[in-house]
Length: 367
Image 1 (cartoon, rainbow, N blue to C red):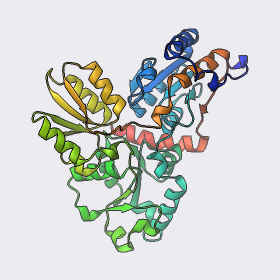
Image 2 (tube, rainbow, N blue to C red):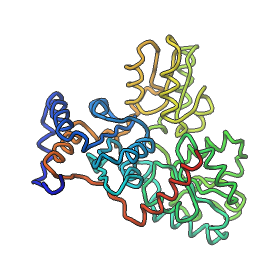
Image 3 (spheres, one colour):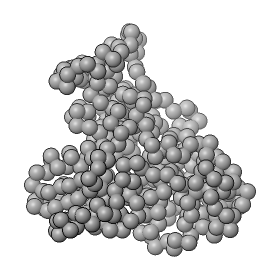
Image 4 (spheres, rainbow, N blue to C red):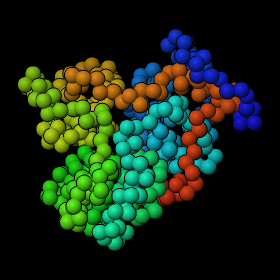
């Protein structure tokens, strides 16, 4: 296909098409490509896109599944930039990863730039032999360069479902953990492990020593990066109180990226996959308030009409960057492939790919 490259089709030609036209043309493009392409749809993706996905799931699950299906030369990842990077890191050399819209990023991932992490590591090194004392642990919701940093410095990646096992792995090797970019996942995990609060500090990358004194840093066992998910940050304890008062039998289930004040009042806390499985398998007639991204909650409502399922916020908490992947961009990327043109390829530099894979493989070995 690559030898047949033609003039790239313009995205503007697709943005005036009707939803039905986009659907029909996307189906036709998939059929024309056949086993040349695998479409991955993240759980938070909008319905008009997820309907075309060959596989659904969270970012790491999708990246791993794509790598296992190396017969597909093209992977179209309907998610955000760091997810497509992870797919490229884990994919085979014969596979090309495509992100339908390069503007689909992640506000939380952007809260930790590699230059800031390098500066943090340098400042910690002024206080201690950092490579002997601190293990860097990065959430998979992060740039490839940060995963590579962890791989090169003896560190590891984590997901929302294995953060506890990762922290145990880190502390078995070194005294302290630098956990980034999500403060809330790190704090909620440490709270569940019974860590004293005076052993946890927050690192603000815009302040010297993260806004801490050297004594405070030296006493800490867990250094949390000041970062958060803009979606999960929106949920508040008042939202929990409202649903408990209005629906006395309700069960509150939230993602661990939520603030600890929400997590501490919830009945259940877990990853996206945990939320999907728990609500899906619950008995008919049960009542749930779900604290995670709106598209996913609405999909759960539609797929399980035998239950009462509510979104845990009166405000719209949609992943705006994920929302940039729409039917027009998906159709555009597929029809370009049919024409022999690869658009928006995601390619992680070789050195970053090597070290990022090391960090990811350390994590995957835990399970």
